Length: 200
Image (cartoon, rainbow, N blue to C red; front, side):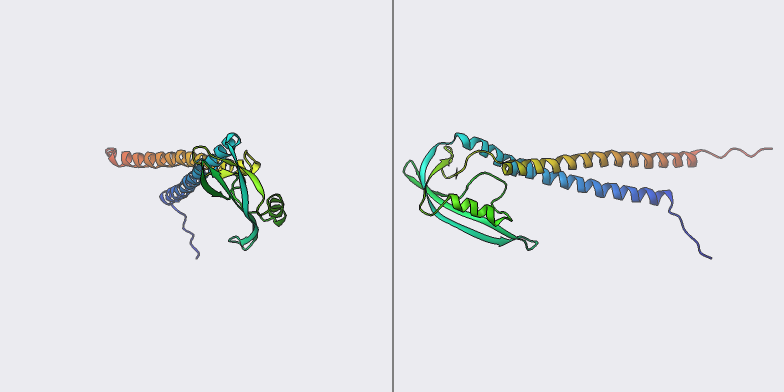
């Protein structure tokens, strides 16, 4: 005869608690990753992009302008316009390679990389915007673009989702813990209560 054993209340509670803790850990990791993406990576990019509009300019020259190719972890081909330029500030020589402040230099579109190369040719004279506090930091196209905002807002989204998950799971964990404590207290009271005296 087939016998089906049903889990007792303790096993059900333990399973629920393990699931809640696992989800809580995921939420914390998501929040931490989002925090670093938004505030340690994305926000500095956005701040510098906005500040670069007011950076001073000096004359410079394109030294290298070439199309580079690579593959990502999934094997997809990526294209990058490698632009190196030189400039001088207060008699000191510097080299830079930043075209604009955005989330990343590579793209899956070869046409986009080639459009960048069409704007910058080797030995071409250019205007370089440099950071007056750190002259070695420079950019050719100051200001913000859509890509300047992406790292910050994507990171902020993950951070918000992670915080909401973590808070929700903490509340649920407290609820599960309260149910367990209540059940233990009830069982303890039942054991501590003396049995009624026999009648007659």
